[in-house]
Image (cartoon, rainbow, N blue to C red; front, side):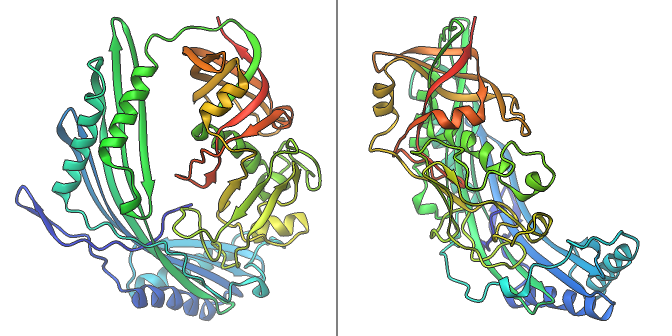
Length: 464
């Protein structure tokens, strides 16, 4: 999901240069651009039309080895207009919001539409599905941080990483960013709405060395509300601790053993199923979960909800990118698939209705199966592999075959014994999802997939 919202900073000076982060347009002016595009499309002969206008700005600083490495300040705006002329689709965009430029973009889209093939599934989402009530989800929390303060935060973050251990002798840098945008979406159904949001970040990557051995690891915090970010020093310490813990890894013999995904890795593991439930993959028949509605894809302990209404969460939204009202839905219930992720187009291709997911999933809540974090599930596992990093793109979306390079820690007697690297974990997702035996309460909420540690009963591990 793209972050949406408006962020307004006071002007600040750096080395004699003046920067400002205020928006060029008011919210009313931004909305009027969208409405003007729709009106022009009507007059130009479009049978249907939709337009989205955005404006955004942001600040990003990166410090490495105590010195400022990058300073970026962006100010962006854009118009995207899509028209339909008797089932023929055309699209054009513009970064210029002047009357003439808006009209030119619309006219170009109409011209393009006249030369494309008609598609009976093309067009706006049904008018009856447009959002009527637009709840305030508390998504906009600007971070009024001067550049010198952001640089200082990044330095403190990196310094904390170096202070963890004398074996940390290098850094890939620490970054601090504050960004936001505002948008309005309008269409010829008479729908026009938008909202603001914000996205802030502090991250750090540290490098540890011991003789010829060298390992790196990172950590980050991200939130819409700046006051809810982890302290910069805590982020640096976590990155440093993670790097040191990985020093002098061992190789494993090829075997079958339980595998425990950390929350950060578990989100991606679940995400393969979510991608397979997207309408585009389903109607193109490029999904390993074709015709999976009502079928037990996951173990009975797994339940997943798609919730667009969580205050301040990154993937929250009252309506999707087509204006369709979002809804809280059960996607997986006791292991059984109960819902797909459909836009208007993919829904028509499948003979179904839009689910309000044009643009992607919302906040995916994977229900924990019991109280306990990674350490508790490690004790339950007894002996096996904790996966903290995955490499490569070894997932076949058509068959579900799964093979990824991995690194992490080997567990003996319920406790971490030593770090491991240069291994591969493999299986078929249809089988692996059935082997989920526990999901922890140590939920990672930094992205759109809110899930704790996931314990898999067994996987193939290829080592030395």
